[in-house]
Length: 395
Image 1 (cartoon, rainbow, N blue to C red):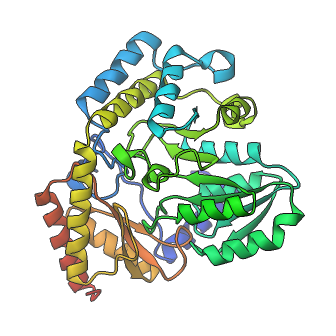
Image 2 (cartoon, rainbow, N blue to C red):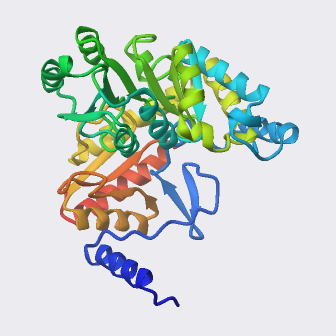
Image 3 (cartoon, helix red, strand yellow):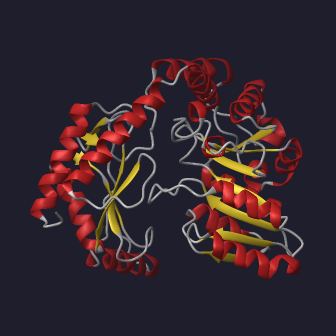
C-alpha cells in the first residue's frame, strides 16, 4: 500500500467525508439501467436513472447501435475536424436540427464538454455572462474558463436579472444570459419567456441548458424552448443525448453561423475524439421513435403525476418540482444520506444529495420517475418512503 505524501493526504481528505457522514460508496450496476436493476448482486427498483423515456434498453435503438458498429466500427478514432466526421454523424445533426426546429445543431462528446467548450468560444474579454445562482456545475465551469466577467442573479428572479442588465449594459460589448431550463436538483423550470423579453430589451444573447428538458417537455419531447413556443428565439440551446435520449453526447442548437464557429473554436470538438458510431446510430433511431409516437412521454408524465401525488399525500416536502425530477427534502446532510441508505435496505435506490451539490441544510433524496416504471414498482417505492419516513420521524 502506498505511503506517499499524496496517498496520506487523500486518505485524510476521504476520512473527513466519512466523519461528516457524506461519504458514498459507488454502486456497481450489473444490468441495463432500467427501472429495475441488478445492483451489487441484488435486484433493486431504481429511482436514480436519467433514462426518462426508458430507451436505454429499447430493442430498436440497440439494433440501430449494432448496425452502426457493423458499418463504422466501435470508435470514431479521430477528432471530427480531422477524419472523425462521417455521413452518419452529418445525418444525426441534420435530424436533431429538424427535431429541435432550429437552423443547425452541432454535437459534442457530453453535456459537460458542451458547456465548457461552447461558453468560452462565444464570449471573450469585454463581455459579461449573467448566470442563475443554481445553474449546473458545467455552466459554472464554462463561465470560469471564459475570459468574460460573470455576475450571478438570484434563482428565477427576473427583477434581479433586469437590475443586473440595467446596471451593466453600457459597460460591456456583449452580454450572455445563461440558465438551466430544468434545474436538476429541484425539478423547477426557468421562466424562459421572461428571459427572452429581457434579452431583447437589453440586447443580450441567451443560452439555455436543456439537459433535463430534452425528451421531457414540448411537443414529442422537443424540449423546454419548444414547450414555451420559443423556437428560434434562444441563441444557444444545449441539450444532452445521454438522458431521455439514452446514448452519449450533447448538442447545441442555433444558427448555421453558430455551428460554423463552434466547429472551429470549441476546444472539446477540436481536441477530443467524436462520440462512437454506436451512439450516433442509437441517437438517430431514438429521434425517429420520438417523432413518430408519444407513447413513452405520455407514460412518463402519467407515472410522474401519480408518484408526486402519493408522496405529497404522505406529507413529504417535494419542493417546487414541475418535472419528473422529484426531490424529497430532508434537511440535514447526514440525515438525508441515512434516509437514502434505509431505502436501499428496503430495495429502493434513490440518491442522497447533499452539499456541495445543493445548499447546506437542504439535503434530499432525489427521485426520477421514468416511463418504464410500473404502478406496482411505484407503489413499492411509496410504501418504502412511508416506512422510512415514519421510522426517522420525517413524517
